[in-house]
Figure (cartoon, rainbow, N blue to C red):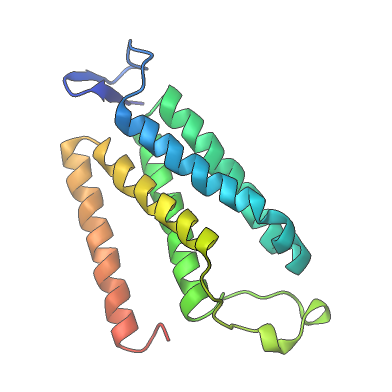
Length: 174
């Protein structure tokens, strides 16, 4: 497992880098991840009231984002960066879906009415702050990748974005 370098000229493929000092980029990733995680943990109780699945999702997500912050500071490997990018991108996509077309899943009929079904939710300040933090995590984690892998990841992110726009403009995303 390769470790992401902590300085521009320092690389390692066998383990953590000798320096225990995190770079500024790692610190910003950790800060943004902690912000997103804290917001998700703060809204967990209200989502548990809606449905245990929603509450569990927010609890697991918040804990993952807090753990990601620690791991990025302690041992920022390529796998950690890629997992952080994929997980945060998935959360951003679920958020956008929930605010445009509604969630693809819903609580069982016995605990809610059909009026809730696939309804787009409104965006609030906490939602936007968490999403902005997740986007910052994605962008910053990309910068920690090797140049070759960075190009591949950026190209995949661009393809994802173009694909989403095509789906949106074709009417497939509501």
